[in-house]
Image (cartoon, rainbow, N blue to C red; front, top):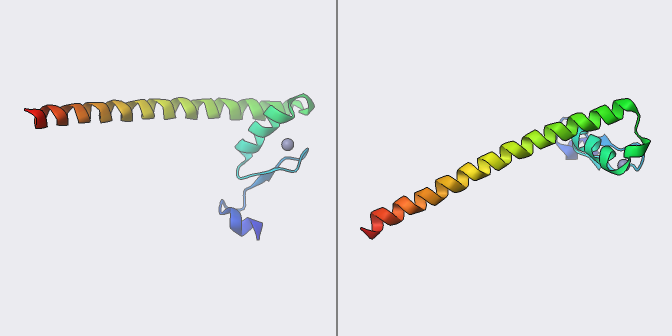
Length: 86
Ligand SMILES: [Zn+2]
């Protein structure tokens, strides 16, 4: 039932230490690094660092896209105002 409910090809991951479930291994690795960092072995710490870098890259990409959308929206409204006000 949970495999069908997850909808992500049955690829949900659970934390071995606290039992919390996550929809992806990346989210589980991030959770382990934030909540159980002292108890991690080298491979788990490497997975956490890789997931952290991947998350950081995604956040930077999102910030750039959000900034571009805001700039386009601002100048779109500005040009619309300039055309309508004339
Ligand atoms: Zn945990």
